[in-house]
Amino acid sequence: MTAVLVVDDDPHLLKALRITLQAHGYDVTTAADGHSALLAATQHPLALVILDLGLPDLDGTSVIRELRTWSRVPVLVLSARHGSEDKVEALDAGADDYITKPFGLDELLARLRALLRRSTDPDQEPVVTTDAFTVDLEKHRVTRDGQDIKLTPTEWKMLEVLVRNPEKLVTQQQLLSEVWGPAYAKETNYLRVYMAQLRRKLEPESSSPRHLVTEAGIGYRFLP
Amino acid sequence: MTAVLVVDDDPHLLKALRITLQAHGYDVTTAADGHSALLAATQHPLALVILDLGLPDLDGTSVIRELRTWSRVPVLVLSARHGSEDKVEALDAGADDYITKPFGLDELLARLRALLRRSTDPDQEPVVTTDAFTVDLEKHRVTRDGQDIKLTPTEWKMLEVLVRNPEKLVTQQQLLSEVWGPAYAKETNYLRVYMAQLRRKLEPESSSPRHLVTEAGIGYRFLP
DNA sequence: GCGGATCTTGACGGATTCTTGACGCATACT
DNA sequence: AGTATGCGTCAAGAATCCGTCAAGATCCGC
Image (cartoon, rainbow over all chains, first blue to last red; front, side, top):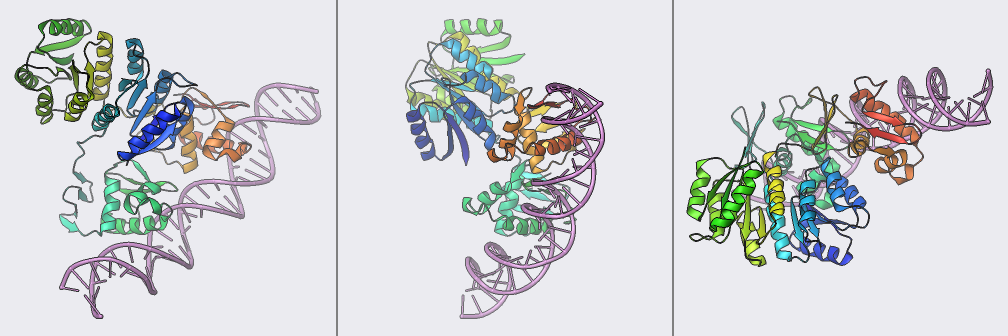
């Protein structure tokens, strides 16, 4: 699910945006001022930020600059000010787009789609190879030494999530909610059982895995 | 040099844009209609396309769609039409930004910079680097001399808070409440223990830390 | 319905991580 | 000097987490 953070000090607009975005399938969190926005951005990974420039505590441009010191998440700025100076300042601070109020919701959604389209790299190789096994995400197949490996549906889903995020740490909650559903966030038992099975089938030495690595207390990681 | 293709059927605007863009260091080629635009796009690699929607031969949206069948070059659309329908159509066809005429040249340049910033360095990961170690917040990874450093969950959280506030002083209370929770505001013991472990793992000389600095009586500070 | 594959569940030992207290050292204050 | 406070260090016990196994339960095709 695509996670979007909406930052605005107007509760009505905030609510309207939340409802609209959720209706279009986005996972929405909100913040009403700059500090809580920056804090919220640290809590979980975001796909996009919609940021009102007129915040009560911090200058909107400062929020962008602060965010940009450690994140590249696309930022779409809302503002009541039409002056081109403000636009230039925000864009050069690191914003990716700028709409002036009042704006049409369909335009906002279209610009949002455009930003997301560009930030999610579509050129992910459909085939990922390690020195031990090969995963073909399109054909839905795993091979080792040219031999097909049979995976159960659950094993495959779990492997898929990991392989689609190479090098990246995937948290237990992420895995559980993507494979079993959001309601299973505490069944870490499943992870242990299925990770063991995956390793038995894929890792040359399942006792010391080199490609399906566990990060104790947090999650797992796939290393090509 | 950054190559930009400008497509517009108004010779005056075309000339004005060419001069302005060249004055700002861009390498400009021009086209006056859709067919020659698509042809020009095949001739040499482009960093960006500025496209007027009102072309004599082809619908501007069709030009984008055509272009998108084989190229991902960023497209900035100019248009005299303010209707949100047109915007949505162009953006969904594959445009990356949309400005309505009349527009300020400085705004155009700022939007152009924003687009180029995002497309030219897509591999610029959100990593924070020091001369001793590198922190990749997205992948949740710390490396030193190319080697992965293993951090426990708590060590990572603490490092994360510090790295997300570079140069800034982070108070003990802030650290404790973000890592252990608001109820642990007095357990400054934890900070000492975990700071020592972080330094042992990350600082070349953990006895005289240069990146994880303590501010006696107040808190800690991360220096890149 | 039957049988095989797949999924859930619980229990165990071993490994990792967290907590806790004690000690030495430096700095500041009396 | 003497005392107090704050910081870094260390290690040991407690708590948690992980890999493993196997026994049901459930699902599915035949």
